[in-house]
Amino acid sequence: MSQPSTRERGVSDTVGAQPDLAREFLARRTPLSAVRSTLHRYPAISPGVVLLLAVVVFGLINGRFWAPANLSLITQQVAVIGTLGVAQTLVILTAGIDLSVGAIMVFSSIVMSQAAIARGVPPWLGLVGGLVVGLLAGALNGVLVTRLKLPPFIVTLGTLSVFTALTLLVSNGATIQGSQLPNLLTWTGDTFRVGGVDFSYGVVLMILLYIVVAFILGRTAWGRHVYAVGDDKEAARLTGIRVNSLLISVYIAAGGILALGAWVQIGRSFAASPNAAADVNLDSITAVVIGGTSLFGGRGTIWGTLLGALIVGVFRNGLALAGLDVLYQTLAVGVLVIVAVAIDQWIRKARK
Amino acid sequence: MTRTPSDRTTVAAGTSAPVLEARNLVKTYGNVVGLDGVSLELYPGEVLAVIGDNGAGKTTLIKCLTGAEVPDEGAILLDGQRVHFRRPQDAREAGIETVYQSLAVAPSLDVASNLYLGRERRKRGFLGGVLRMLDTRGMREQAKHELQELGISTLQDVTVPVENLSGGQRQAVAVARAAAFGSKVVVLDEPTAALGVRESNQVLELIKRLRDGGVPVILISHNMPQVFDVADRIHIQRLGKRAATITPRSHSMTDAVAIMTGATTVS
Image 1: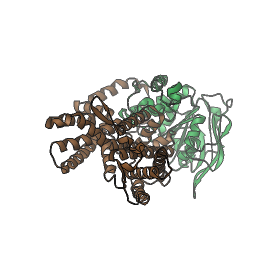
Image 2 (image 1 turned 90 degrees about the vertical axis):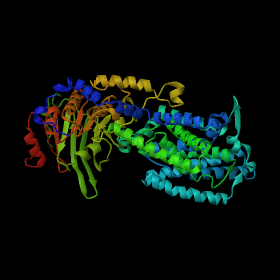
Image 3 (image 1 turned 180 degrees about the vertical axis):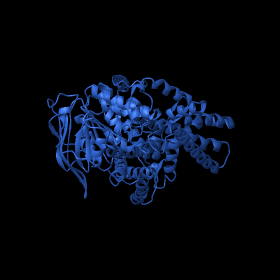
Image 4 (image 1 turned 45 degrees about the vertical axis):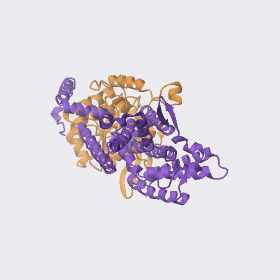
């Protein structure tokens, strides 16, 4: 940038400058850049469009796709990833990443069910125990990220193994079948019927969670601070936000949400298995990314993640109904991720 | 010490006490001496520029005044009361607002959210008290009002994300957030370093308007013409000490540079 010389000290041109600025700004707008700005401002648009197209196309390929029973099945298949996606979104919005979501969820589900089947322990106490484990696990991640100043990727890569080992220690590698568990823990898998369609309580729990987190992110100071920290950590600190406390609270919140995910998972699979969640880490990141949340932090919405989780669910289900092998489902998910990130990069260029 | 309040123009000489005062601040980093007994006075309704070569201690001085660093020795007085800042937030709560060179704004949040970042207003009653819901509309209206007060007419729409703004507009947001909340002192660290000529002029205009509104301003800058344009007094740092405090009337730019580099000394 040029530095003003002595001759340009006069500031009288400030008033006349404004129409120029406006004209320059307007001149740069082309139809494509207008689309890009719109997507930039409302990041949930593109996943919304993709989901709509996918539902239409798969329905046209195989009419059974649109059957209420099938749509209900998709929501149930999506419930666990959708719940984990909430936790993952919070962490990714702060420009972090959580590779331990699956490990924490499984650890919490094992503690929950081991406690609940122990003699003399009421089921609700088992549930609370699992929740506490989730919160503590999240707190450990948060403290390691902020106090040791390690990158979240490394911290959660480490705690992924730690919690997996603890899970095996507590469970002895054994799966507890749903029939052994109290009804409270498998309640999330129960369904109720509205107008001929089955909904599971796990899906209801997930949707409630989205509503609550959407409110917190959009309508509270804490939510704004999550975005501000993800945008620019140092700037956030300088504006007076306590960045470390905020980050720890984000990881603790994520841990609590993962414990709810554990509950949903027990209901969905009607069992508590130490080997339950092989793919859920990457699937949760996939849902967040397809939902338009930027891995660089500070941009994205929680509803985008729900759309992202639904897109993955719809693709897997739709491709299966179209008679394609499982490998094509995996392939499709991979392509979706790359396309989503490419679109994100293109949108971000809108302001560079 | 080289206090020269006698030729100040904006305030009657010697009649008013400093708003912000630093006495003999010392700050060392290991063996490196950042500040070696620096004093500084900021009087009501003035623009005090702080200039100095790289490594002269400008930034360290400002960091101590704004709570980003804690001085090892010396005292900071605000309105004659001794204050101890441990964090930037302490200084802000005391009424010292800082605009950093690195533009402390959150690009993805809108203008109003940025103005209120870190001091959001909540709704009244159950929604705000229990659900902790933000008073978004109230903050937007107030933000619009504050921007008009400051004469920043280029920012009509406070719902635009800051990343959609030009550099000058972003800087205006940063200055506005510092000035908008009844602050006692506004500190600007190289506010025009990243800006073009026209945008720089807008920021300088804003600084003058702040001063005319009664808010004293500390301006750190490398840019001599700008300093001599807006400053009432100029504090010159050299080798961790205050070399002199001059005014644009009593000294020329050449004098200032000579003092800065040590070619001339002022007793």
